[in-house]
Image (cartoon, rainbow, N blue to C red):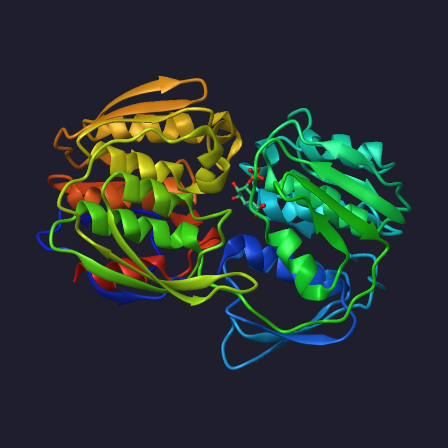
Length: 435
Ligand code: S3P
């Protein structure tokens, strides 16, 4: 029977062998959305069949896109609506996914019908004004109807929008992408300026589909020219570096490890976890398989000689934002202190990841200081197992299971079902590596 609780014991051996993590979550959402508007059919390979991305795919089917399954659920043919989507007959369930809801809001705001999106209690407590404000300036009519102000469910009366020249108040790829997706459906040039470089999967997929988009040399200014029509184009989604990060950290903190992670996405706007772990002394070898489109390769992690604390630089934060809980776990096992600041965005993720990470680190005996915008971890103290909540947050659950592999005794994480939102098959991979 599927259980909501996972317990691990301290491992007496390292992680050995090879693993292929599932497809990238951010790219999968975007492939579903952009493929659904394309003319014609495309083969999608290695789509992430997690709850989050399946919700987005189902939403696109509600708009008229067709999915024909291939040899396995991750491989299918997606037939787009050719820019003629139909009004959804039912409310759209976004589950736990901020990315799904925010990106789809950009599209739905520009389409000529009414729609309504809802999600689980975590999603319904996350801020939506960050997309409602710029989309509203483009003329979108979006109402946040949640019990909490500015939160989902969202009701959208879609229609023709006008272009915008928008400076993001925070480094958010979701907000950037919501505006760019609305811009692609709007006549004229829509411009977005970001305060720091954020993941650029939307821009790369625009190039993949031949959607006219320009990016400045410093990558901070993006412009899209709408309205667009484009043809479907086959795609293979690389493995998710955010999922690989759990094993990279585990192999770095467990003596006797040598683990290869196959076909992991190495997009330079996503790979700061590798840079930071290497700065801490991690022994990470990268064998690049492809450097075009979305680059990817095989990552081999061997237990390092020495593992030391570091300071995460402000510009690195957006590039490893989802890996911070597991980086904090790594820091707890490193000698000396690790400083993670300028990361207030963590407070509005699937849980308040500053509080949840700090609480769980302390429960295991780590010394950690909490700040409004981050934490300082004083590493090197031996940690002990504990019973901890994952607060329904997939990344908190997986991060502290990694800590449990190194900590003395048994570690139990409660409420782990949400691991399925990003990493289906995680339990099987864990079982494979620990047995
Ligand atoms: C994502 C962007 C990030 C990240 C999220 C996925 C995306 O969120 O935390 O998991 O796919 O664009 P923000 O844009 O809110 O920083």
